[in-house]
Length: 254
Image (tube, rainbow, N blue to C red; front, top):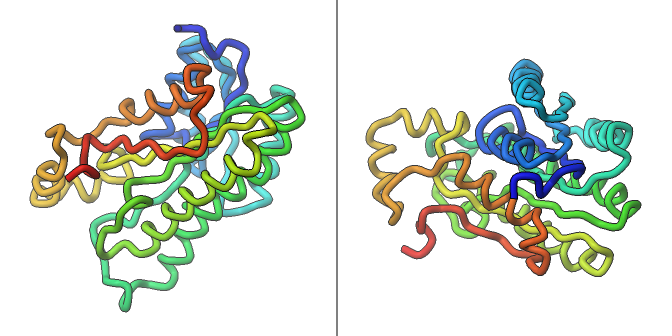
């Protein structure tokens, strides 16, 4: 239904572009009040202004989710704006880009940053979202994992480790909070055409080989993931908790 999230307050991290932007747009179209969060202030403000121009209630907060104190302020902002948090999508993340060195040559600084954003950033967000949801009777959380959280790809040890961690955190939150009215699920996107994959997909040989992996026969779109996220946050998924939904065009069945 077009207005199924009317009056609901929703926080989306990594909302300035790609999958996060598509998620925010679909929530806005269904009546949600939104807090868009991103490290890129220029793109985040532009995305927020675009939603407001379309008639949505949308606000922007600049944050690096690797910084726990920024996540505290992020959730405080949601509390001040809305008084509650009905849904949260912990989507912020960074990519490894084209396959780099194997683990024995993997740059330490790359490991530290990817773990900080892709894993610790999800934990920081959860750590402060949960108390606000509990104050108002619960809510729905979706974490963005990856098919790299379910299988491995050579040359990306930090990304694989971080996304496996997100899957574990998702299950942990379900186990701890389901009886208290909180649902926590994850999406595991496959190969999606976003700014994070642009460098890889720009290499013709890589695009061809990646597309050949996908039984559906095409690279995914941000809307493919966003549609699943909205379903997981909706009443239609009221009995779905602790699950990881692969949105991958069938890669994992091969």
